[in-house]
Image 1: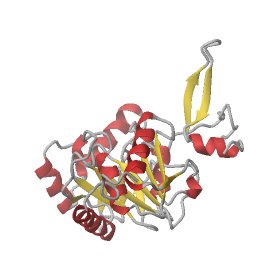
Image 2 (image 1 turned 45 degrees about the vertical axis):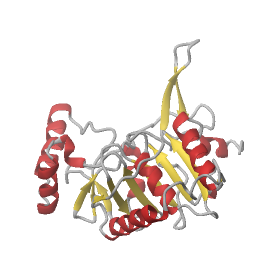
Image 3 (image 1 turned 180 degrees about the horizontal axis):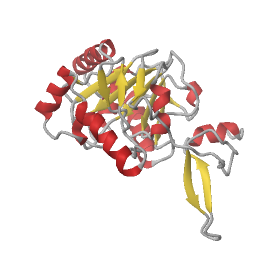
Image 4 (image 1 turned 180 degrees about the vertical axis):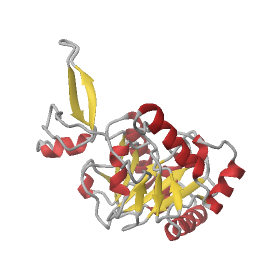
Length: 278
């Protein structure tokens, strides 16, 4: 560890304040808890909310995994791992099963998570009602009064216009029948993983200065009408070109030589584990 830094970079008082915010978020699932977002050597909007949560929770015995859109080797993931390693010296891994803390952007791992693991999601816009109401004051009032009619109207208009609900990411959830929540820009394929999960999900928005949570075994249902159930992306008839998986989230690719479509697991470490590469 670089001795010029405090362990995990952030000062201990700030860590305690962030942990208290996390405890409140866990106690009120889906509720956005304001916190004093700290300065980091990374511009806000590049995952500072998730990084602050990770730095406030991580200890010398933890094992860290960082992914970006399913990949362990993207620029965002590699640089966050380097930064955390520089100021903590904790072990990092690409195996989901080995990690105690997983920080992610845009995906939830395919490997089912355990009760002793924490998944930290980087969130650009935590307010699910921003798509229907620009005013922060009004969205707070809507949450307080559980006035979610504009969100239901948005989904209904999409259904009438296109024959289906067209939201592909940031698909809103109702948490414990009380708060509508933004699951971050994960594909709606991952939404069911948030419901009645074994692990703790923490969501951090550094620029917006909000933290919220889904504790283990919490009801987190994707919004849907009684006669039009929620549907996640379907990859029926498609499989990963590397591992052959048919039940994972697949990225569409093109073979430049033939012009044909190919598909590959978004979760690179899962794909490698299935193939016995790691």
